[in-house]
Length: 421
Image 1 (cartoon, rainbow, N blue to C red):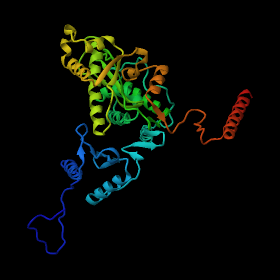
Image 2 (cartoon, rainbow, N blue to C red):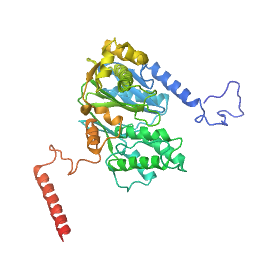
Image 3 (cartoon, rainbow, N blue to C red):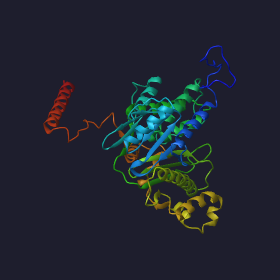
């Protein structure tokens, strides 16, 4: 703070006492973002057009990227000297606190090894379970009952509406790494204005599913190819009240899942082909944004993004410019999909419904199909390995494995004796 012009105090070094806090003002966040952005731009950084919170500088081995969320900052660069120089500049301009390597950021836990990066929200999930008193509940295998359709009139109204809204809001943030919850939470978020006991019971089932594996998250391998593989799907007229369809898609960069969505479409589709085509249009827009983001990160894609769809009629509409009668009401969506196909951004490919990876974003699946859906998403639970433990053959000797097997056989035999007795 600087004293206003013309201020003369009785003693030197006096300051003004503020009657209001600067931190709570509405314009404080805008002023902070303007100050931080101007400081980075003065150092030669460029603000990405695809994401205003991303700043980049240099190329090759001298490349450095900064990702900002209010006053939390992530810095990435292949050269550690560039990171130290930037931290020294930020510390001289603003007083910063260096937290070292990324470990915990905005409720997301990051664990990096030579194999890759694991992201999860285990502590955040356990906090939700503790607040709702579900730490000792019985877990379930799926977040939603297959075939269960929720409506506004189902059940009786609950008194604690704010508690339901808070729970759904916290679960929505949990989908940052828990893609398996996307469809179920998307369904429940439609009833935050007037929830009933049926909606609350469905939300409690999600908590029971989280209890099964609170540490489940995403794994990003270190050695990965720069090829976008995208799956688009829709469930036609699934909403019983509005008859609107559900759009679901997932975008893979190599084998790593980088984007996904489960959302109700804005308009009613007159056919399943129209619903699939509207889902294609939303997916193409997402692919275009990811392409721009990768370009800002100096990662060039050499091949068009492969877009898989299980509806051959929608593919025919996108590739055939003669279907005027069928596409008059799909003018904007048709043009954007056809334009990106002609530009070589995407390439439409047909896939069978059984191999449609995005099926879990449009409907509640039974246990067997849901487990297959999760396995194809590249999820990984760092805190709960597979049954029997996770053996690393490079570090665990054969004798130790044999001893572990013997101990387990002993326990099994003991349990068998106890049961028979």
